[in-house]
Amino acid sequence: MRKKDRLQREWELYKSLRGKELQIFSVSTKIPPKLNELRELCTLPPIYFALTEELSFDQVKLYKALVLTEEIGLGWLNPETPIIKLPRLKTLLVALPFWVYLDENFLLNHTNKLGVLNEDDIHRLEGYAERVQIPQDIRGKYIRFLMKLLSPYNTESILTYLEKLEEYQFVPSVFTISDDLKNYYENSHYAYAKAASSKNVHKGKNFFAIVEKIPEIGPKLTLYLPQDYLGQKITIKVENKVLFEGPLETIKLEFTNIPELPDYTSWLEAIDVEISV
Amino acid sequence: MRDYKQIIEKLLNNQISSKEYQTFLNVLKRIFKQALKVHFTTNIEKLFHKYFGPDYLEVLASELIFKIVSKKESFLNLSFINKKYLLTTAINIIYLYLSSEFKLVEKEVNLDDLSLTQEEGKEQEIKVEGLLSPKFVNFLEDSALNHLVLSLKEKLTKRELETLCWYLDKAYKQNPKELKAIADALYKRWERLKPKLRRILEEEVLKGTSADKLFYAIKSEICDKYS
Image 1 (cartoon, rainbow over the protein chains, first blue to last red):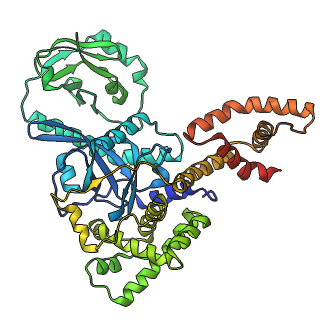
Image 2 (image 1 turned 90 degrees about the vertical axis):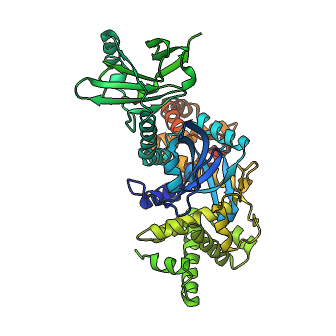
Image 3 (image 1 turned 180 degrees about the horizontal axis):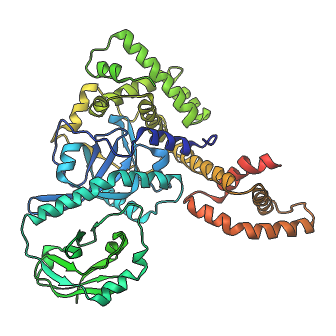
């Protein structure tokens, strides 16, 4: 260890306390989550969430949860980094520049409610998380480590949400992508893209996307769009190439003959859904 | 490594004897001493002494006991509680006081009141801090700068570090004394070093930190040791 390097020491201490997977516990007093709450994940060292957005479909809820931590030196990036004092709990928190999606059952069973933030502070936390880049230094290493630890719960929550949506038995519209378009993506930079944590689900600005590998038909893309888009003319593109254009008849769209890619993360992130004017 | 599970269980279940409590308090005091020495600075330890008096370690140890109680569920769920869990909790308490300029930020709280945080209807309003204590911001900036300077030390060769120090010296002093021939050679070395330096500095984001602060950190940690 380098002499006098406090960040390195804090990182070494943190790593020695965390395994490769999060060890999370159930809480005894279960309080249903609500928007704008600050909640503590029952784990040590603890992780905190500020619930900034609620996505609901009938009885099903998913929350956008901004992540906060007690590791002040590693989490503090600049004088704009939001800080929260919890004097009653003798705790100081810093906001991290990323968020996860967690479903209400996960929050109910594994997090304690600490209190409520006002709208201005929620916007401040969101603005910070959206604006600030994760550095490439030791602090970035720590933030990415935490992202990786939380990613199973993030993905699992999105999948649970999708499964719950499935229970409503939407009849999907199925489209087959042209061979030309499929070949285009297979020979583009997406063929070489490899994200730090590979995933096949993605929550876009106004959609959920999932890629499933089905042996008989190859990979399939399913998109879930907002209900209020029904009947409106929409355009779905992946990096300026149109996958679908026309009036939306169902909120679930399936696409087959999609490109075979080693990793779908950046391809899914390039999906853009817009209402056509 | 010693397991503190049993003693913490006794503490949380109110079965701890006064002798055991005192022994545990002494352990926590030693943990704070270590936290202040290894993760903070002598000056920060002096501030605790100044604000809390000679019993500052005892004050901090009591705060840690309070925090253990507030995280009762998590601590009881751990199968093995090693010292590092207590150390990381202690470090956060030190940061809390540093950020609050050593003011007791809220009146004394009874341990029994902690359950209120879980009650519906007792809405606890939480705020993002506006103005932060300069001591706190300076300390965090210094930690980040210190890390950057040590990274430079690792990533640059001895010759490159000498060139960097020459350039900083030239930039901050108006009339460097070296001969023109030497200056030309150093300038060429500086031009070659620039892209590498840019790469390292981009990796280590230091938004909001002044160039002066960076200069003095490089000077004291690297250049003064070469002169």
